[in-house]
Length: 248
Image 1 (tube, helix red, strand yellow):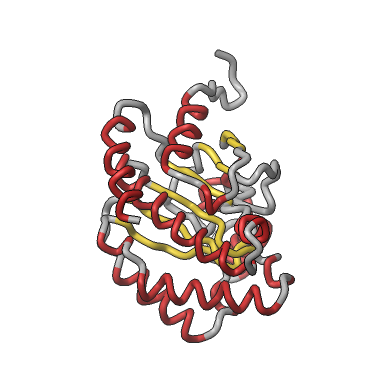
Image 2 (cartoon, rainbow, N blue to C red):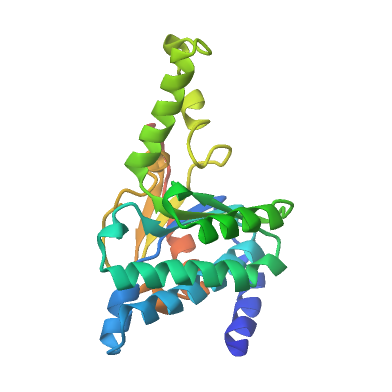
């Protein structure tokens, strides 16, 4: 692990020579398949994937990325086998009590409906957000019990409630007002969304925010992901021409 850290530090100065995206979204995919290929239970893949997440978050902080949103547990993931869900919840607790990212200028914020999580995990989430609130480097949005459709419904319900209470005129609701009710309020839309593992779909991730994001797909399973591969993804993004419906 020490050698990996040294490699990350050595890579960062060269990376600063090219444009850095402001906001990157990552669908951390392939943990289960990674473990299965090695004849291990899926939980080992998730554990390795958590370590990779920390490495990538620290690297993003080092090169000047301002926002990183990672898909950790979706609203659909509750349908997975009970032992896998339990191991994931245990892993989240371990991360919140032992993460090294707190030593860097990384602010952790959680997005999604955390009200259904157990009380201990909710407490650890609140504590982590409070402990890192003053960090002014990278902001990491950790999506737990998150779904893009659920987020949009959550925002719509908040606006409907305020309209019913006479606090706002429904005719004056615009995209800016709607975005202020999203979990990622205050953050720019992701410049690009990365999905490793070879899959090519959005899977209910940041549906509103991704309207003009670029997509980068890679065949590498998430537990094998490295800062070098992230650099390849950034290079691919920097080759894109973002026209937002206009012409060059």
